[in-house]
Image (cartoon, rainbow, N blue to C red; front, side, top):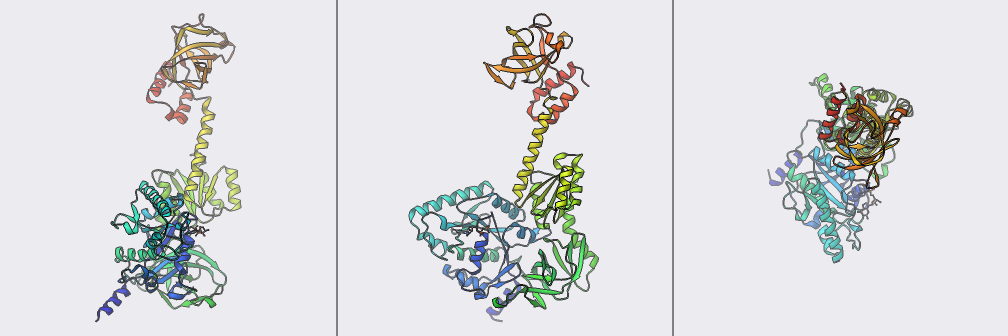
Length: 606
Ligand code: GDP
């Protein structure tokens, strides 16, 4: 065996790494993908790039040719790179198996003019939670004022061509963005300055319009895959395959687009996939990829395959796939396999999510289009800074039955009688039922927006309840009359008082325990130095206007019915204490709650 043979053999044993592109909307994910696909190669399939289902395959020769300018390491052994065609986190989230990602390396696209944006953070969290290695493409460098275009040049060369003021702006923005990443607990550095690949993520400045930095990005992707993931990329016969999308195709019915990460699929194979109503067992009718020749690529025309080897994106046509859930695994039944065990294993993912939702039975209802996005959403809601409990979930459009399920919360906790619908349709009749029952449905295609809407709703609800209970909630206070400051003795009473304990608040009913619990009216207004205030805290000396609520109270007169030796206190009740606890728990200090307890004894409230 020659060295070349051995090399060839090891090459055979490695599969292509799978790469996803993530980032905020408009950061340039799609454009960057287009640019990777064909920038300096004219017309289509040149250089061996092949269009697959949901993915584009780049043979290593192509990548080597395109990165030659960098005089790069020629010992890369991976056969090529498989880039998933649908950018964004949905595809990424669906490329999963048992909670871990099948994406080997990701590109996180950040707009150099905008820095980190909400979906950048969302992507970042996903990448971290799945422990996926990534490279930051700092895109749109050509938008820096005064940028001189250097089409498809390595970024270092392109930067050298720039006037000083462009370099300065570039450096400022890069360091700002590095700081933003640091605030997220992530170390990053420009890749040519990155000395510590194990704990620092590389940044590659790019332009998806003129191609600067593209050679660097490609090289980094395969190098990264090659160096850090040789173990992961070893080819095996064990089928590892994930459903990315479920699509109805004219003439084929419902098909599934899958990524075959490892192993071989054959026409006629018996397969098991995860369905909304349980496992689906069926046989592969056809294994399809787009036609290799562009001229033949008319709509609905696919190339059929007897077998397909990993890693590849394939369309599978088979009977009974209608209710398949995207984001779940596909497995192949071989002769010796126990089909019942496989069915159970396939449903494991769904059950896994069921296990992770709130056990107390109190929480919101969530709905997403695929298992991957559902998982991303529940993970987000679970994170400590968000912390919204989930009671139940469903996949696909929101139907009446989902609204019914959410309505269980109406009696338990109104704010949870809510459906958080992530990137799914809401059926008309479901919406109508929700309106009738008072179920809120929040829709968004960005997880953060869903959270913001829900948060806003909960805050508004709390505020509303606070208002409702304002009449009932009584803040505790103990007031001492200042004898020289009695302005009106009766109807209304206007007095100078010192707040001995608690909080004097407009609206508080006032009572005098030492005079047989005599009631003298409500605090109508409070003034400090001729300025009206809502509340006055302990130690303050203020003037209060007390207005009687009925004829009897209106009769009460300073000097006759009470005097400066009497203490005035808030008249509290069981109901007022409950209202305080429900809506103002955090508005009162420990000391103020102690006063509530004291007054409770004074008024003999049980
Ligand atoms: P996506 O939402 O992340 O997929 O973003 P797109 O790829 O659709 O890009 C959004 C917009 O930014 C489009 O108008 C692109 O033409 C533009 N764009 C993307 N990349 C670049 C770039 O590198 N430079 C400039 N100047 N514009 C870009």
